[in-house]
Image (cartoon, rainbow, N blue to C red; front, side, top):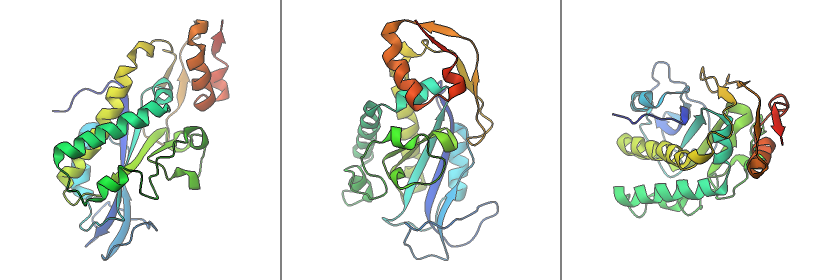
Length: 248
């Protein structure tokens, strides 16, 4: 049984690889980074999924053929913009990579697997550059998205983890996905001392493309908290939301 997620909203999965045949409801789109021999190649993208729905979709959609050119991307949305702002700290990228490294050793991923190169930042499409303030407001594809963490706030209200490779065993892929999700959750849990600073917003969970920020109340905050709000305002809030914040 999965744990209860207090911070995670929905999860989207992108699978790159090759398929022997088309499946009903599965739409394969071209991906220029995928170089593999199969009748159908490219990537498939899930709709926004609740965590307990991931396994079913993954097992249905998983590629038949994979190689080192194939990636596994995990989009995560969170329940409040406040939480998203925390994820834009460099500390989070370090935390996530450490969690994945620990999982890789525990799972005994073979030494020549592409996983380890990606964990060293040696993949062109998942570098260790950390550019949230360049990425968060981009509404279209852009060249600066090829980082381990891609901040797709303006498009999807998600953080995209691009660092995972494809795994031949879908069971291993599922474990890797939940290692990512659990790292998001536990990192935000470690920030819970801040979570009451702004209880001002909610995000609807209809789907990742139609989420809206909804102001709930006006609040005042102490000056000692302004360092956080300055960061939060600069990278997340839209003008109509910023106008709701009162600085002492």
